[in-house]
Image (tube, rainbow, N blue to C red):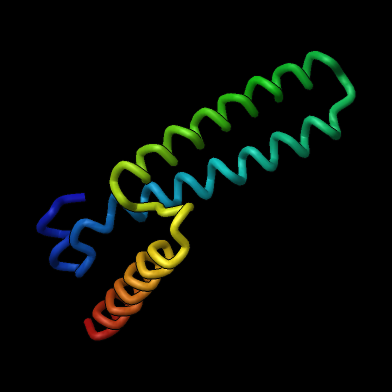
Length: 103
């Protein structure tokens, strides 16, 4: 997103963090869904294809996690730091919603 637009709507540099978080949540959901689908599948060919997709989803999750760790967007081993980050993001979302409601 254009930096000017981010600043105008009050998001600043949070856009990358929001996108990465959404992508991470989607990757986690894909992993759960592939794992469940594998247990419900009867044919060996389909199970193999789903296992391949599961492995790709796990690799994608790892890449996103590493990116978020490197950028300081995710603190899975420091819960107080993660809580502070989550509260900051929540405050930004509330402020953004209020600004948009005033227009």
